[in-house]
Amino acid sequence: MHGPIDPDLARQSKLPQNSILFQTFPFRIDVFGFCGMELNPASRAARLAPTSVGDINSSGLDCSHELRTLFHIKCANVFDRNRKSHCPGVYADEGFARGEQADIRTGKTERMKINEERLIGLFLDLCRINAPALQERRCVDWTRQYLEQIGLEVWEDEAGSRIGGNANNLIAKLPGNLPGAPRIYLSAHFDTVEPTEGLTIIERDGVFYSDGSTILGADDKAGMAPAIEAVQTILESGEPHGDVYLLLTCAEEIGLKGAEVLPIQDLEIDFGYVLDTGPPVGTFVTRTATHDKLHIEIIGRPAHAGKHPEEGINAIEVAARAIHGMRLGRIGPETTANLGIIQGGSATNVVCPSVTIHAEARSTNVEELNLQVDHMIQRFEQAASETGAVAKITHERHYDAYQIADDTQVVQVAQRASRALGLEPTLRTTLGGSDANVFNVRGVPSIVVATGMDKIHTHEEYVSREDLIKTAELALQIIREAAQEKRHVL
Image (cartoon, rainbow, N blue to C red; front, side):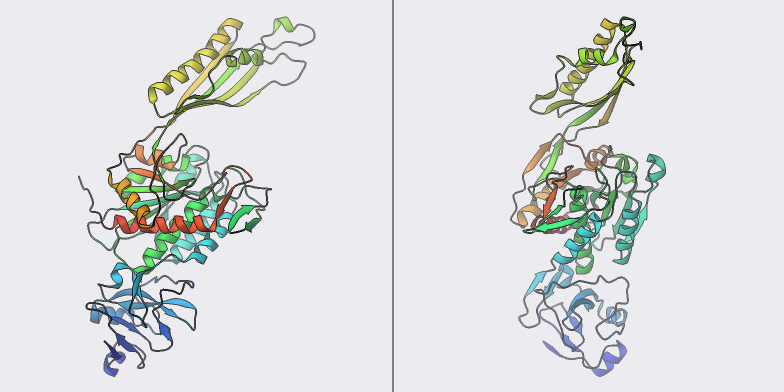
């Protein structure tokens, strides 16, 4: 039914007297000013998130609090075609509490969708802020202001002072409105693998690239923008959900340093998702490798290369002897090894006195990894022993592997979300690392969500509009699917 609101009720509720009451089915009541406003799910103009208990309707009058008191009503978005924006309205607990929108002309409902243009704008804005590792302050400040303005609880930890950077990890919380639902997180990182100062973004056929002079920075803004958009959409819809956190980290590209010091255990999160790998969207990384690092210093003996070369011990030659015959590259199906950096020498007329080498090895099988690392260490030690040099070697376990079972809550929720969107929820293995490795070690079940970013860490990096939208839709659906679960409290 629908009809004019009683004038006395309108006055009591501070509503314009030309307002009407519209009810499409039991337990749902929509109240709005009869001034060209309509509930229209087809419109995708910019949405304004409600930021307080008293929200402003199209007439500029604050009526939300009084109507909520009268009807136990919550907040919704109403489309004003004159203002071309979604304005906060009010509704009762049942229909819109599922995040539905209604078209007054047809009475049909559908769940609120992401705002595609807002998502793209957010992605481009984030990419344009230069944020190399340990120098993410500008991007953190910009993002913090954005999240505070849409109504989230936002704070920073003390990561910067602990890892030698100018910025901290940023944590935002959307408090839950559904008791018993799991507490989840969505995560992405601020830093890029190299600077993007002067970035020029080009769009060709719906795909975003840089102009080739820098990376694009889609790693990981193609994860961050969709995560933020998903949370903002849930906030605006008013539908039921548990606590949802955004964990936005710094210094990921140089060794997961931000995640290492983020106090995730204090948040009592049940499980979560790191949006930080390549396509296809809809797939998930549930199994990764253990990653070890080696720092080798070969110490020889200097001598004049022209007068007395026989008195020297050339550290470059010692390193070459060690590397010759060393197993490198792909050692097995899921084991790799690499020498990434070699530095040494001072002049061509000096027998090189020292060389430093940075190396790594990775494997999903810790026994195979240990064998490979031992092999590499033995090669350097043997070459040094045979030539009279010294090998100083530091071995560090950079991060541990994880393998999340298919039947766990974190995986089941993700796969249901993917299928709901018509995607294929393949579970993947990767030898790459992410903040999920750290969060799993901290006791929070975590998997990696595929985004559309491709050719990352190169100047050919790209991501499409379509994949950005799909990623945001998937993150949104994950939040919705998680709300159907119950917390597993020990």
